[in-house]
Image 1: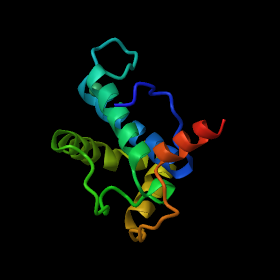
Image 2: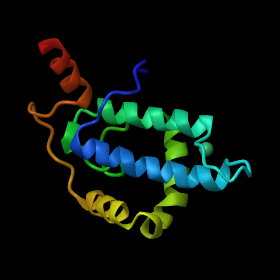
Image 3: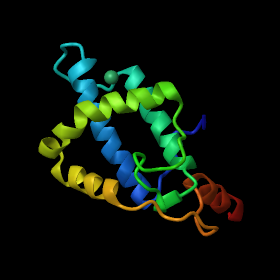
Length: 135
Ligand SMILES: [Zn+2]
C-alpha cells in the first residue's frame, strides 16, 4: 500500500471516494461506536477506507471509471469485497435520506455504461507520478 495516504484523487474519483467515505461512516456510526457521543471512525473502517482510496487511485479507467458494480475488472480482494457489500447494503438506502445529492449521483453513475478502455485512460496513480516526474 502507498505509504503516503494524503495523495489527491482527481475529479470523479474524489467524488466517488467522498461518497464511499460517507457510506463507511454511516455503517461505522451504527456498528462500531462506543457510547461517547462523539463520532470517530474505528481503526477497521479507517483501514478499509484507505484500501478503497488505493483501489480508486490504481483504477486503470482513471476518471472514466465505471461503477464498481459494473466494472469488468475485479480489483478488490475477496475480504474487502465482502466488506464493501456489507457496508453498501446497509448504508445505500440510508444515503438517500442523509446525503441525497451524493446518493442520486451514485445511482445515476451505477447505470452508466462501462466505457471502452483506451490509451488515453490512465490511473490517478500514473497521472500523479507523471506529474511528480515533470517537476
Ligand atoms: Zn467502524
